[in-house]
Length: 160
Image (cartoon, rainbow, N blue to C red; front, side, top):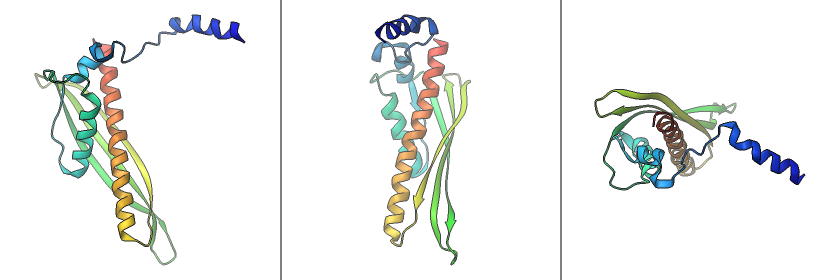
């Protein structure tokens, strides 16, 4: 068993896998992410996504902006669980983002989408349902930000 594990470890460098964030905050990916300025995103959902993005790319404080990230959001809540009396019992909240990473000249370097959805139980308490919708939005904002940052990090790793 130990011999097989040691052999597998010897093969690992040959597979071409490399750490994305190698070098820590001084690495090429962290430096590229630190140079991303997030354009204002309107609305409550925009504020949540913008803050999540800024939290994830702020590895190097006070870095000069080299890129601009523009994000457009589409936030929907749809009812899909319906009782016989036509009352909705379940909702799906979907947050989709189309984002563009631009350089200082305005050229588009990355144009992609990210998104996620969450199920929400609709209960008798309107307050509880609204709280669940807001909690879902907060979680979705973080998931969308994770997807955007991962895509930008891959772009930075491949181009630098």
